[in-house]
Image (cartoon, rainbow, N blue to C red; front, side, top):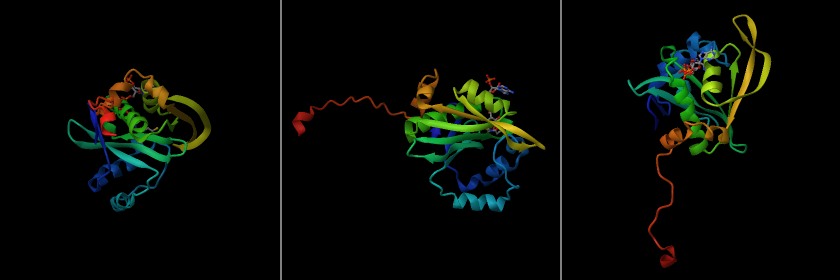
Length: 202
Ligand SMILES: CC(C)(COP(=O)(O)OP(=O)(O)OC[C@H]1O[C@@H](n2cnc3c(N)ncnc32)[C@H](O)[C@@H]1OP(=O)(O)O)[C@@H](O)C(=O)NCCC(=O)NCCS
């Protein structure tokens, strides 16, 4: 369990079926994200949770600390161990938008990915009309726009551009709030402080 002030991040449980179904079927969420799917039944959602053993992706449920309710999802997708990079993404239930929760989740996810998992680059894509997501990743969390895929995504009968965004570990380290989130994810003091003369024990 990764816990900060507003939220905790934890693995998916079988009991998360309803919230995961809401996160995939609610058009206020699905219209803002890149993937597309037919509506997902509760039966399919339950089966997906049970068969979700793909170790190149690792999803985390976002929990509201105030209520202990599951309110979203984040994590790492398509982990490339050789190049130490992964795709990261976030979805929150609409009632939780605009309260700074997204910023806390992205900062926590970066600290976890860079200081616990061992990655050095995170990337994602954002639709050209998704102001809250661009504001969150670019303005609040230090990500850069690396490119623009023209007319790549079909939404509301029209074609939309897709921004490719990314951040490197060293860019995360330069953020003023980084150390707070690193200490939250890795709470053990790893400065060597051992009162033993090793020569006596060789
Ligand atoms: C995107 C999402 C995670 C943002 O979460 P959130 O908790 O609202 O984010 P935060 O409040 O921490 O930060 C968003 C920032 O973007 C800013 N913002 C909002 N709309 C904006 C716009 N149109 N243009 C620029 N910035 C904008 C906000 O003002 C806020 O900055 P501030 O704290 O300085 O005011 C959430 O809206 C969501 O889950 N949306 C649906 C799924 C989705 O779009 N996922 C991302 C796919 S790439």
